[in-house]
Length: 254
Ligand code: WAQ
Ligand code: MG
Image (cartoon, rainbow, N blue to C red; front, side):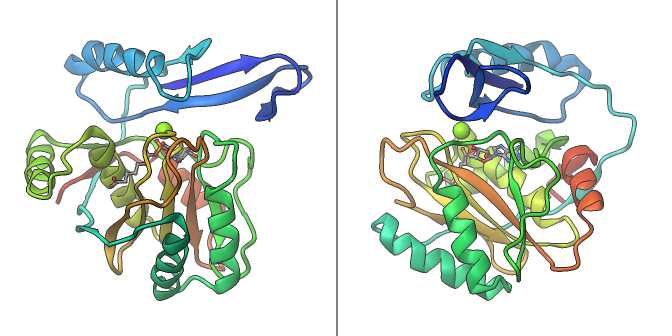
């Protein structure tokens, strides 16, 4: 599902080709579901699109595709939460974690800039972990991770483990599932995420090396900024990584 708001004039965001209008990203969601659940999922996605804190969309696109490829199964990243009292402190924590994963100081600085930018985009940036060069083909859209899901069993396990930490919410569940697919992608070494929801101030850094590390107070309450950056190996094959993240069906929960 993709919900956006088309506005006339110069209200920033992504300019629509050959048009005076711009399109502001409101909300998006995706998943792998059994055919029998589609009716229910589409209704949930629609109501989510229409009640987002970023505003009311005037365009909602729902795409339903039959998947022919059998999904591969990858493990959940272990979840932890680090103490962090302010956006300033979060910079130091993000830097330490990303540097530990093998991201250069330059790429860390550029990555933080991207997730703190005012205009949220639909997808994620792919950034070279050494040179900080962005390698995704469409920089306005970014790479959108899709075709990811859980089995009933693994969903239950995830909920149980998150409930033990008091964080069994749809936001955390979806983020852990997404980060687990991203971490399973060859060539990706780490992810940095800040929600674009103005009221959601916990972000995370994730990697296969240390799992999914939640960072409270990563941004100020009320800020509509947010974004995701996937840091990739310097010699990464952008076509293969994009194909895996956008198209390869992956079930999390080995
Ligand atoms: N693929 C790529 N990028 C995405 C996707 C996706 N499927 N979904 C969202 N993004 C990008 C996009 O640029 C958004 O602006 C940005 O990420 C933030 O998306 O454990 O809710 O859906 O408490 O607002 C983190 C949970 C929640 C932390 C993250 O992200 C925790 C969240 P949002
Ligand atoms: Mg959001």
